[in-house]
Length: 368
Ligand code: SAH
Picture 1 (cartoon, rainbow, N blue to C red):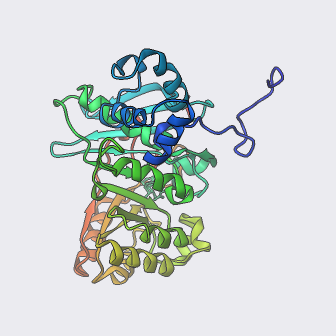
Picture 2 (cartoon, rainbow, N blue to C red):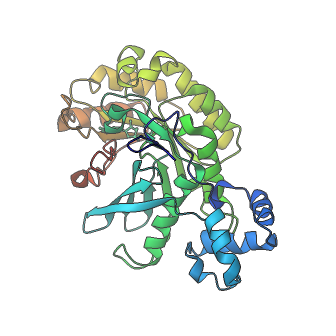
């Protein structure tokens, strides 16, 4: 027991691990875990069915499992991982941000966005982020810790349950897209993020049965991890947060660029495109008078020309106290036109959720 007043969970290094959960385990590991509890291995499949196909983590609903065994199985394999601190909605309640409290008090956020033709969830892979990009709210606070595989997966399970239960207006719906664009750098939490992708995409009841093609992993450009990601044989989309076409500026906007340069990052991205057959998304936050000049648009166009690529321009969401702001409309239009003149497909990202601080780069969970 900690002494009174002692802080048990504050430092990432000394922190306790999140409890083990079914969603951390492969189907085989689940059978072994169930057997260790003295239960028949087929109970693993029953539990998986409840969690991954019915989103039912309340043992009272597991009527195919003897009541006496439920408590033990739930306690060991389906512990409560997180609780909702609050939901905040906007856009007629079709955008909903959820603030979660994890077992150790850590706060993370996820955002669900319903469109007429699809539903996207933006999820967190870390509490905080260590990449330190100066325009990003999460980057300001530093890294608290990696999320476990199950902590990543559960954000989605909870979202799918709310959609099914019609908590989001518009009738029952299925989740179609998942973007690792909430808090954290997914490729800095590599093993757990890959584990979560397996759980999300394994067919029911081993996993949630979602399509790999609907999942986007967004990275600042951790080159070795990008190359490793290409070897996983996944069909996910890879998004690269470029934000500048030249190393001089990118060194300041995405500090990890001092380690892996624009050219290396793009080469790793093209490798992923070749292996996966998927177009690369290039994320570019347009920041007034910082990275939106005509010459930078032209340089970006030349770097991307002829590649399997799509550019997402994101009007900067200024973070509190930021000296930066979004580009002027005429500069944004000129930037788009310059890319198009090189034949590079480009869209300007809509900025849903801005008024609930749920938009790109604003997830900071500061308010606990
Ligand atoms: N760490 C990953 C994923 C999280 S951020 C990454 O950097 O890719 C998701 C996207 O939002 C990234 O492209 C990020 O650069 C962008 N972003 C961060 N802060 C932003 C802001 N204030 N305005 C617009 N986009 C921002």
